[in-house]
Image 1 (tube, rainbow, N blue to C red):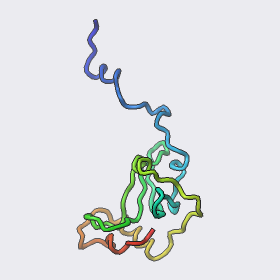
Image 2 (image 1 turned 180 degrees about the vertical axis):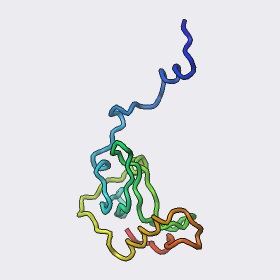
Image 3 (image 1 turned 90 degrees about the vertical axis):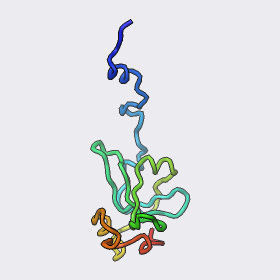
Image 4 (image 1 turned 45 degrees about the vertical axis):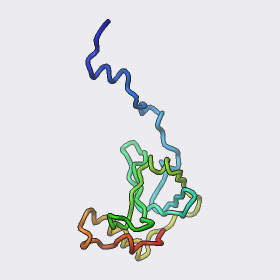
Length: 131
């Protein structure tokens, strides 16, 4: 019997699926863009920002937060897996233009990054009811 090194043995019995197509994302995720509307059967949510991996797969989407949060941020991030697990799908409506005053303020808050609550441009209470 031959003994494999720790790394070789781990690689031989890896439980992680290979990236050769076993984990492909649905087409709607690969084509999701800013202004698209998503829903999991509940209220419709407008995609405010999209981050992608190098291969084009969806990494995460930024949405306006629906209710008050302990972070007090006006936005939330959903990873691609969160969207799948929560049952989100793209709603087939026309892409929304994000050119209103509140849309611009939310974008500024997303660009602001981490900061103290007193320095936040918008809080979760300011965007309650905003899609």
